[in-house]
Image (tube, rainbow, N blue to C red; front, top):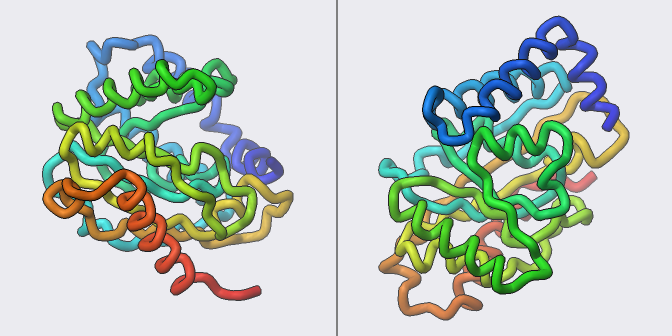
Length: 241
C-alpha cells in the first residue's frame, strides 16, 4: 500500500478533483448524462497518471488481437489489486468486470463499480453466481465487453497462476463470443508488496479463441486451453530474479 500513498502524495493537487468527479459520475447510475466511452476515458486518464506517479510503467502487447467489434470477454490471470489499473490504461475501450461481494461497498471501489457497471458475485451462492453469468452473457451479446478473473481470487504466488474456474467461461459460451486470454506479469509488485521502487508490469493480449473454435469443446477443455496459453506467455516473458 506504500505505492498507493506515493500516488496520492505526488498527485495531491488533483486528487480532490478526481474524487469529486468519481462521486459525480457514480451517481449517474443509468448512464443518462455520461456514456460508457466518456466514463472509460476519464478512468483511463486518471489511472495512467496515477501509474506514472506511482513509478509503474505498463508494457502492453497484443492490442491488435482485440476484436474490432465489441462484445467479447477477456480472461486474464489475477495477480493483485493493481490488475484493474492495467486494463484501464491499456485496453482502449469501455469494459466492465465481476467483483466479489466482499468488496461491494469498499470505499472508492463502490464508486468505480457504479461507474463501469460492474457485476457483484457471491461466490458462496451458486444460484446467484449463475444468474450473474447469464446477465453478463446477455450484455456481451449486446456488445458490452467484460474482463473476468476466472481464478476467483488473486494468486498470491507471484507469476504463478491458479486453476481457472470453468463456470466463469459460460458467460462467453452462452453469448457465443470471442474469448481473449490475457497474461499479466509482475502486476503483484505494484500494490501487493511494500516496495515503491520503479517497476515495469506487463499485459499481453493473446489471440482470441473464436466461438467456432471452442463450440464443441467441454468447459474444462476451454479452461485448460486458456491456462496453457497464458502460462506459456508468462514463462516466455518472465526474468528469473
